Length: 304
Ligand SMILES: [Zn+2]
Image (cartoon, rainbow, N blue to C red; front, side):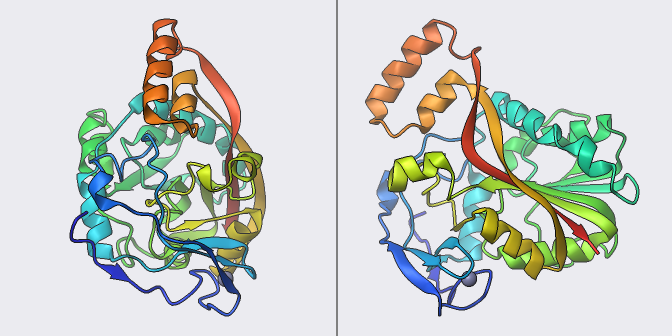
């Protein structure tokens, strides 16, 4: 990340104005302290973030300036893939919402998972009867870790305008990715274009208004240089409405992860975490799965 080029966003990425924005936090990035996991998912947090603003009209926290797209694409392409166990657990949680969503879809032909990682969620889509399934993922490591039967369904790259056809999909999913993209509104507008009428977008992201975020404040792991915006129920709904969607529902979700992973997320010094994780790992903490309200929200929007 040593030749990071920063660009101005000129305001809130939802309402495209800075009229309602107040400075939220100064930038605290030390590029020399970052490792190759900095842009990986489910990593040990570094507690670094860009200069942050809060749009009081949209209830969004956003970074401005941000690294330019070339830098982001390069960082994600090279990022390491840290854990497929956690990816599996997360994807089971997200898939538990699918039966109620899919009952309202026009059909089960065409599903796209944006930021699909090792494509583990695509397995759920197959199991539930979807066909013409695709995943798109910018990082090479998770694609290489994908199961041989899933790998051909994953396209390497970022979700860009024109990459898919109009009315191609009945369902577009995007988990823990919406805070990473440089243009979340553009992403959702493009999702709207490629969805059939009655098709759904299903997003999961961090909730800046969650209990854990409020208790931990700026020590919350959601403040991270990978996150270019942080949503709440209000701002994630606003994002979908501005993109043309009708919001079906928005609600907080509980995540199930091994105890050792929860410790990774907790704001403790690194050496204490490593010790704790070794001790708990020794007593089988890797196998002990604990559901907690980790501060995520899920939202579903339908194309009219
Ligand atoms: Zn705004």
